[in-house]
Length: 293
Image (cartoon, rainbow, N blue to C red; front, top):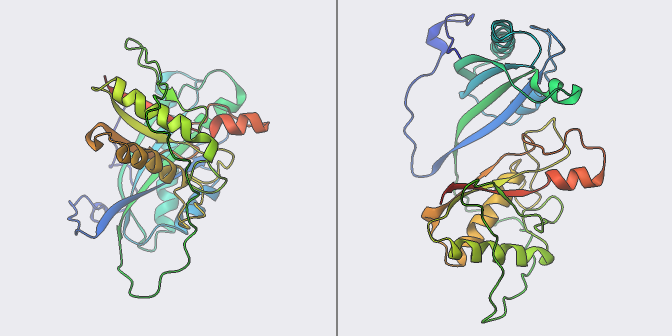
Protein backbone atom coordinates (compact mmCIF):
# COMPACT_ATOMS: atom_id res chain seq x y z
CA UNK A 1 0.00 0.00 0.00
CA UNK A 2 1.33 3.43 -0.88
CA UNK A 3 0.40 6.97 -0.08
CA UNK A 4 1.11 9.03 -3.19
CA UNK A 5 1.18 12.75 -3.68
CA UNK A 6 4.27 13.17 -5.85
CA UNK A 7 2.46 11.91 -8.97
CA UNK A 8 -0.36 14.43 -8.76
CA UNK A 9 -0.30 16.76 -11.73
CA UNK A 10 -1.08 19.98 -9.88
CA UNK A 11 0.70 22.21 -7.34
CA UNK A 12 0.96 21.06 -3.74
CA UNK A 13 -0.50 24.40 -2.72
CA UNK A 14 -3.85 23.24 -4.01
CA UNK A 15 -3.98 20.42 -1.49
CA UNK A 16 -5.83 21.22 1.68
CA UNK A 17 -4.12 19.54 4.62
CA UNK A 18 -5.23 22.02 7.24
CA UNK A 19 -7.21 21.08 10.34
CA UNK A 20 -10.72 22.46 10.21
CA UNK A 21 -12.44 23.92 13.25
CA UNK A 22 -16.16 23.37 13.20
CA UNK A 23 -18.70 25.63 14.79
CA UNK A 24 -21.34 24.20 17.05
CA UNK A 25 -23.78 24.42 14.13
CA UNK A 26 -21.61 22.46 11.65
CA UNK A 27 -21.30 18.80 10.91
CA UNK A 28 -19.11 16.78 8.61
CA UNK A 29 -20.87 15.28 5.60
CA UNK A 30 -19.54 12.54 3.32
CA UNK A 31 -20.50 11.64 -0.25
CA UNK A 32 -18.99 8.61 -1.98
CA UNK A 33 -18.68 8.10 -5.74
CA UNK A 34 -17.03 5.37 -7.81
CA UNK A 35 -15.49 5.26 -11.29
CA UNK A 36 -15.49 1.87 -13.05
CA UNK A 37 -12.88 0.64 -15.55
CA UNK A 38 -12.76 -2.09 -18.20
CA UNK A 39 -10.19 -4.92 -18.01
CA UNK A 40 -6.61 -3.56 -17.89
CA UNK A 41 -7.88 -0.02 -18.62
CA UNK A 42 -5.89 2.71 -16.87
CA UNK A 43 -7.31 5.99 -18.21
CA UNK A 44 -10.85 5.70 -19.60
CA UNK A 45 -13.66 5.18 -17.11
CA UNK A 46 -17.37 5.70 -16.50
CA UNK A 47 -17.78 9.10 -14.80
CA UNK A 48 -21.57 9.11 -14.33
CA UNK A 49 -21.30 8.61 -10.58
CA UNK A 50 -18.79 11.44 -10.24
CA UNK A 51 -21.10 13.77 -12.20
CA UNK A 52 -23.90 12.89 -9.79
CA UNK A 53 -21.66 13.64 -6.80
CA UNK A 54 -20.67 17.01 -8.27
CA UNK A 55 -24.32 18.03 -8.25
CA UNK A 56 -24.39 17.50 -4.47
CA UNK A 57 -21.06 18.60 -3.01
CA UNK A 58 -20.29 22.29 -2.33
CA UNK A 59 -17.13 24.14 -3.29
CA UNK A 60 -14.00 23.56 -1.22
CA UNK A 61 -14.91 19.95 -0.54
CA UNK A 62 -11.98 17.63 0.18
CA UNK A 63 -11.54 14.31 -1.56
CA UNK A 64 -9.67 11.05 -0.96
CA UNK A 65 -9.07 8.95 -4.07
CA UNK A 66 -8.51 5.19 -3.75
CA UNK A 67 -7.83 2.88 -6.71
CA UNK A 68 -8.38 -0.88 -6.99
CA UNK A 69 -7.84 -3.75 -9.43
CA UNK A 70 -9.40 -7.20 -9.82
CA UNK A 71 -7.71 -10.50 -8.94
CA UNK A 72 -6.07 -11.00 -12.37
CA UNK A 73 -2.33 -10.21 -12.64
CA UNK A 74 0.39 -10.32 -10.04
CA UNK A 75 0.65 -8.04 -7.01
CA UNK A 76 3.08 -5.53 -8.57
CA UNK A 77 0.96 -5.20 -11.73
CA UNK A 78 -2.24 -4.65 -9.76
CA UNK A 79 -0.62 -2.00 -7.55
CA UNK A 80 0.61 -0.14 -10.65
CA UNK A 81 -2.76 -0.51 -12.35
CA UNK A 82 -4.70 0.77 -9.34
CA UNK A 83 -2.33 3.73 -8.94
CA UNK A 84 -2.71 4.73 -12.61
CA UNK A 85 -6.49 4.49 -12.33
CA UNK A 86 -6.46 6.69 -9.24
CA UNK A 87 -4.23 9.20 -11.05
CA UNK A 88 -6.62 9.28 -14.03
CA UNK A 89 -9.52 10.11 -11.73
CA UNK A 90 -7.50 12.80 -9.94
CA UNK A 91 -6.64 14.39 -13.33
CA UNK A 92 -10.34 14.31 -14.24
CA UNK A 93 -11.35 15.92 -10.95
CA UNK A 94 -8.79 18.69 -11.28
CA UNK A 95 -9.71 19.46 -14.90
CA UNK A 96 -13.28 20.17 -13.91
CA UNK A 97 -12.61 21.30 -10.34
CA UNK A 98 -13.59 25.03 -10.56
CA UNK A 99 -12.52 25.25 -6.91
CA UNK A 100 -14.96 22.55 -5.87
CA UNK A 101 -12.49 19.87 -4.78
CA UNK A 102 -9.20 19.78 -2.88
CA UNK A 103 -7.45 16.42 -3.22
CA UNK A 104 -5.98 15.44 0.14
CA UNK A 105 -4.80 11.92 -0.70
CA UNK A 106 -4.45 9.44 -3.53
CA UNK A 107 -3.44 5.80 -3.26
CA UNK A 108 -3.50 2.55 -5.18
CA UNK A 109 -4.58 -0.43 -3.11
CA UNK A 110 -3.98 -3.10 -5.75
CA UNK A 111 -6.16 -6.19 -5.82
CA UNK A 112 -9.61 -6.10 -4.28
CA UNK A 113 -10.59 -9.78 -3.98
CA UNK A 114 -14.21 -10.36 -4.93
CA UNK A 115 -14.14 -14.00 -5.97
CA UNK A 116 -13.64 -15.39 -9.45
CA UNK A 117 -16.92 -14.28 -11.01
CA UNK A 118 -17.34 -11.80 -13.84
CA UNK A 119 -19.71 -9.50 -11.96
CA UNK A 120 -17.50 -9.36 -8.87
CA UNK A 121 -14.39 -8.68 -10.96
CA UNK A 122 -16.12 -5.79 -12.71
CA UNK A 123 -17.02 -4.29 -9.37
CA UNK A 124 -13.39 -4.52 -8.23
CA UNK A 125 -12.05 -2.58 -11.22
CA UNK A 126 -12.84 0.79 -9.76
CA UNK A 127 -11.68 3.98 -8.07
CA UNK A 128 -13.56 5.25 -5.02
CA UNK A 129 -13.75 8.98 -4.33
CA UNK A 130 -14.70 10.02 -0.79
CA UNK A 131 -15.86 13.64 -0.79
CA UNK A 132 -16.02 15.37 2.59
CA UNK A 133 -17.34 18.81 3.38
CA UNK A 134 -18.68 20.90 6.20
CA UNK A 135 -22.42 21.28 6.24
CA UNK A 136 -23.65 24.29 8.19
CA UNK A 137 -27.10 24.00 9.63
CA UNK A 138 -29.04 27.20 9.05
CA UNK A 139 -31.79 28.21 11.44
CA UNK A 140 -34.77 29.34 9.37
CA UNK A 141 -37.43 31.70 10.68
CA UNK A 142 -39.76 30.81 7.85
CA UNK A 143 -42.78 28.61 8.40
CA UNK A 144 -41.57 25.05 8.04
CA UNK A 145 -42.78 23.05 5.09
CA UNK A 146 -45.17 20.19 5.61
CA UNK A 147 -43.40 17.23 7.17
CA UNK A 148 -44.46 13.67 6.41
CA UNK A 149 -45.47 12.25 9.80
CA UNK A 150 -44.06 8.93 10.96
CA UNK A 151 -46.44 6.00 10.97
CA UNK A 152 -47.83 5.10 14.40
CA UNK A 153 -45.92 2.27 16.05
CA UNK A 154 -47.92 -0.41 17.82
CA UNK A 155 -47.49 -0.14 21.59
CA UNK A 156 -45.51 -2.80 23.36
CA UNK A 157 -47.68 -4.79 25.72
CA UNK A 158 -46.53 -4.21 29.32
CA UNK A 159 -44.87 -7.13 30.99
CA UNK A 160 -44.27 -9.01 27.74
CA UNK A 161 -40.75 -10.42 27.54
CA UNK A 162 -39.45 -10.19 23.98
CA UNK A 163 -37.29 -12.86 22.43
CA UNK A 164 -33.62 -11.94 21.96
CA UNK A 165 -31.01 -12.80 19.32
CA UNK A 166 -28.53 -15.48 20.20
CA UNK A 167 -24.93 -14.31 19.68
CA UNK A 168 -21.99 -16.58 19.01
CA UNK A 169 -19.52 -15.06 21.46
CA UNK A 170 -16.61 -16.75 19.64
CA UNK A 171 -17.33 -15.96 15.96
CA UNK A 172 -19.18 -12.69 16.69
CA UNK A 173 -20.90 -12.60 13.32
CA UNK A 174 -23.01 -9.61 12.34
CA UNK A 175 -26.67 -9.76 13.30
CA UNK A 176 -28.92 -9.34 10.25
CA UNK A 177 -32.36 -7.98 11.14
CA UNK A 178 -34.16 -10.16 8.58
CA UNK A 179 -37.61 -9.22 9.82
CA UNK A 180 -36.97 -5.48 9.64
CA UNK A 181 -38.56 -3.79 6.62
CA UNK A 182 -38.90 -0.09 5.85
CA UNK A 183 -41.58 1.85 4.03
CA UNK A 184 -40.35 2.41 0.47
CA UNK A 185 -38.26 5.58 0.15
CA UNK A 186 -38.68 6.38 3.85
CA UNK A 187 -36.66 5.79 7.01
CA UNK A 188 -39.60 4.52 9.08
CA UNK A 189 -40.04 0.76 9.49
CA UNK A 190 -43.33 -1.00 8.77
CA UNK A 191 -45.59 -1.82 11.71
CA UNK A 192 -44.89 -5.52 11.17
CA UNK A 193 -41.18 -4.89 11.79
CA UNK A 194 -41.47 -3.56 15.32
CA UNK A 195 -41.08 -6.98 17.04
CA UNK A 196 -37.65 -7.25 15.41
CA UNK A 197 -36.59 -3.97 16.99
CA UNK A 198 -37.86 -4.99 20.42
CA UNK A 199 -35.95 -8.24 19.95
CA UNK A 200 -32.79 -6.17 19.43
CA UNK A 201 -33.54 -4.19 22.61
CA UNK A 202 -33.80 -7.43 24.59
CA UNK A 203 -30.51 -8.61 23.06
CA UNK A 204 -28.75 -5.46 24.25
CA UNK A 205 -30.17 -6.06 27.74
CA UNK A 206 -29.21 -9.74 27.71
CA UNK A 207 -25.60 -8.90 26.82
CA UNK A 208 -24.85 -5.81 28.99
CA UNK A 209 -21.29 -5.44 27.62
CA UNK A 210 -22.40 -5.63 23.99
CA UNK A 211 -21.39 -2.62 21.89
CA UNK A 212 -22.64 -2.39 18.31
CA UNK A 213 -22.51 -0.40 15.09
CA UNK A 214 -25.84 -0.20 13.25
CA UNK A 215 -25.20 -0.43 9.49
CA UNK A 216 -27.88 0.67 7.03
CA UNK A 217 -27.93 -0.71 3.47
CA UNK A 218 -30.10 -0.10 0.40
CA UNK A 219 -30.54 -1.98 -2.84
CA UNK A 220 -30.97 -1.53 -6.53
CA UNK A 221 -29.21 1.67 -7.64
CA UNK A 222 -25.42 1.38 -7.91
CA UNK A 223 -25.01 4.71 -9.72
CA UNK A 224 -25.77 6.49 -6.44
CA UNK A 225 -23.92 6.13 -3.11
CA UNK A 226 -27.23 6.25 -1.24
CA UNK A 227 -30.95 6.66 -1.79
CA UNK A 228 -33.18 9.72 -1.44
CA UNK A 229 -35.11 9.87 1.82
CA UNK A 230 -38.61 11.11 0.93
CA UNK A 231 -39.08 12.30 4.52
CA UNK A 232 -36.10 14.67 4.50
CA UNK A 233 -35.28 15.09 0.80
CA UNK A 234 -31.65 14.16 1.52
CA UNK A 235 -29.62 11.47 -0.31
CA UNK A 236 -28.84 9.60 2.92
CA UNK A 237 -31.62 7.02 3.15
CA UNK A 238 -29.48 4.18 4.53
CA UNK A 239 -27.98 6.50 7.17
CA UNK A 240 -31.40 7.71 8.28
CA UNK A 241 -32.69 4.15 8.56
CA UNK A 242 -29.71 3.18 10.71
CA UNK A 243 -30.26 6.32 12.79
CA UNK A 244 -33.89 5.34 13.38
CA UNK A 245 -32.74 2.04 14.89
CA UNK A 246 -30.15 3.93 16.99
CA UNK A 247 -32.79 6.30 18.35
CA UNK A 248 -35.22 3.44 18.96
CA UNK A 249 -32.66 1.66 21.14
CA UNK A 250 -31.92 4.88 23.00
CA UNK A 251 -35.62 5.52 23.67
CA UNK A 252 -35.92 2.02 25.06
CA UNK A 253 -33.22 2.40 27.69
CA UNK A 254 -30.02 1.38 25.86
CA UNK A 255 -27.06 3.61 26.76
CA UNK A 256 -25.96 5.58 23.67
CA UNK A 257 -22.31 4.93 24.56
CA UNK A 258 -22.90 1.32 23.44
CA UNK A 259 -24.28 2.13 19.99
CA UNK A 260 -23.18 3.94 16.84
CA UNK A 261 -24.68 4.00 13.37
CA UNK A 262 -23.57 4.44 9.76
CA UNK A 263 -25.20 4.44 6.32
CA UNK A 264 -23.39 2.29 3.74
CA UNK A 265 -25.82 2.84 0.87
CA UNK A 266 -25.44 0.17 -1.83
CA UNK A 267 -21.68 -0.22 -1.39
CA UNK A 268 -21.81 -3.65 0.26
CA UNK A 269 -24.45 -5.79 -1.46
CA UNK A 270 -24.87 -9.38 -0.37
CA UNK A 271 -26.12 -10.24 -3.88
CA UNK A 272 -24.63 -8.67 -7.01
CA UNK A 273 -26.07 -8.19 -9.54
CA UNK A 274 -29.68 -8.23 -8.37
CA UNK A 275 -31.91 -10.21 -10.72
CA UNK A 276 -35.01 -10.68 -8.58
CA UNK A 277 -37.11 -8.99 -5.91
CA UNK A 278 -35.65 -11.48 -3.45
CA UNK A 279 -32.14 -10.29 -4.32
CA UNK A 280 -33.21 -6.67 -3.78
CA UNK A 281 -34.78 -7.47 -0.42
CA UNK A 282 -31.60 -9.30 0.62
CA UNK A 283 -29.58 -6.12 0.00
CA UNK A 284 -32.21 -3.79 1.51
CA UNK A 285 -31.26 -4.44 5.11
CA UNK A 286 -29.90 -3.29 8.46
CA UNK A 287 -27.02 -5.24 9.97
CA UNK A 288 -25.67 -5.04 13.51
CA UNK A 289 -21.88 -5.19 13.66
CA UNK A 290 -20.54 -6.42 16.99
CA UNK A 291 -17.85 -3.97 18.12
CA UNK A 292 -17.29 -5.31 21.62
CA UNK A 293 -18.77 -8.10 23.69
